[in-house]
Image (cartoon, one colour):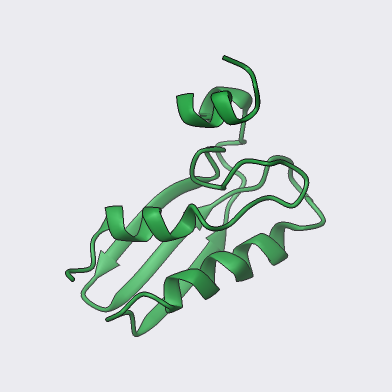
Length: 100
């Protein structure tokens, strides 16, 4: 299986913010996925700056990416610009939250 952004995003759907019953992809927390051969770099955010579980979520994201066959190196960077907002939640995420 070739490594690409879609494979990484699918794996990241296994990671949840412990306070919200929606995965981090549909919650809109993933800002960027870079695939450079066997190296993966992800830029993500949290629902609020200083979120007490931000590092926990980032470590879980790194863990699920490392499980993908062919991945040799993973870095997950927490960023807060632009700030997260509810507009970033996907349609599927809104359904999961009962918003639509």
